[in-house]
Image (tube, rainbow, N blue to C red; front, side):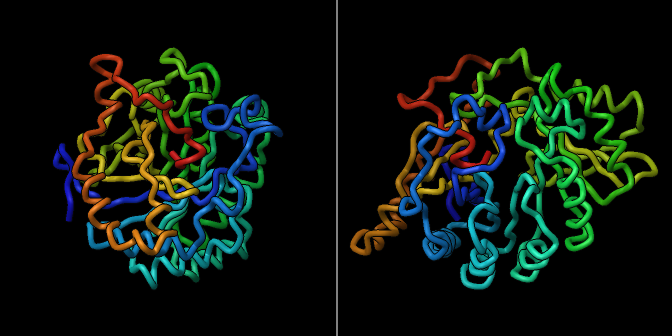
Length: 335
């Protein structure tokens, strides 16, 4: 077990397995920046599955319990079920999850993911309306994703859906989303639009707060508070007489920095101690150079024990000082 300067444990690692995505969501990979000329990582730069498993095995003694595979779009990596199998059976990670846009979730893929040990799936879906969907993401297939959600429930028993809510863009989709999934085994999570990276033209004026979302829902449904996990980033509520639960992730209006127990690993092996960080720690140097691999334990101890990130908390008080380098893009560390 290891703790940082704010007494926070390390228990959770989010791993981006690719910086590529087949979608172009405006809050993550806007198409005017991530176009045909954008230089993505070369295949040789990506951590191999064997290297990722080695990272997980090495970090487990420090307290690592959960891993979430992200991207970009993680299902663009071929045979990702092999990685999941290794994380569960070789690295002995207690919980392995994945966040995906759902566009590549066929039934056969879902069965393979389940059989190789995947514990749960979270799907990003910001709108059911084609018109609104085209604004949020000009490349989308919401009808297919809706069917994939049903398949996930059939095979995994339940699913989480992430909806990033942006003011005057998709805030009118809140109630239609609830109505669509009201009697399904789903946790529908409403996420405040975050200032991650430097390319999404974030403005506080575009943030639709969790309080506003909850107020709208309360006009149509009776909400009952559910217990939250100690390290949870969301506040969860049930809806009277329905299967659907809703949750609110309020990183702008109600930051959860004080409980943050997660690190983030980019597809090319850079470790970040905060979602809003611009300072990478190069893990790949240690896992691709056998001569230096023996010192990795000491290196990680130094990185985590010196961690004092609380960007979102400081944002409430004053404009936080940024690293000299720009904040890393969401597509590189998976949100």
